[in-house]
Length: 326
Image (cartoon, rainbow, N blue to C red):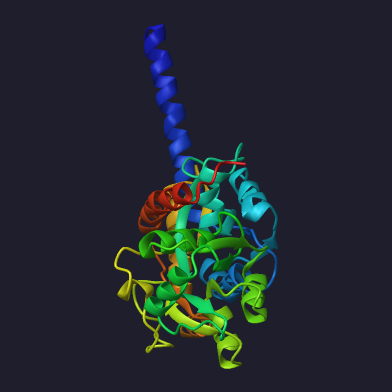
């Protein structure tokens, strides 16, 4: 056998060994605890979802799921830590569009490529969201709100969870669809924006239904509309924004699991199966649905398509807002 032939045979053998080793690892996965980075602080929202699903996922995987909160930089710190981890399935992150989609457009020197370095595992849930106003606002419908805003050009403002947040983007898309000029006022997160509406500091904001309902029941805010395409089952008499503004489309606001980009497909499939089965649990579903969370439980391919579609929607909203990378 000549030298080139021997080299080719050796290369072929090495590749076979590598493939068999990868297959063996996938078949035995997981064999140790899995770290789930939650890229937000403990509390409502992403952290609540992760901790609600975790016990059932542990049962499905047969290994502990260790939750580690790494908040900061709008979730980029935690997401970046996951992206730099070994692509073996033993580290995941629960993230939101601000960490994956808007960061691609708004963050200079982002420490990870949202397409190359992140592997979608499953979109878990998407919160039902709403447009809320202070009770003093003379509008109970979207049409009445638009008419009121147009009678007060440049004088009406809306709060959001911060520059580049989902609800900032919602506000810009609402302005475009309605032909209004409601002024953006950023806050550090959703609760301060809701508090600002309650106090009358701003007349309106956009918020998760779970944030809005308790204040509505207390008479401190009024829910005018749901932002999703379909009505929220818990508030069947509250219309959607789209029922009035046919051109309005809310950007995605999912909570989802991601792994490092080069994680083997078989491992991704194992993790996805655990997420989907966990979300099918009656106890898990009830806890999540009680918080106005719509259960998605997608495949990796469906989640990847959602992220890709989000790039288009958010790019348009960011352009409308005139935002530049910082």
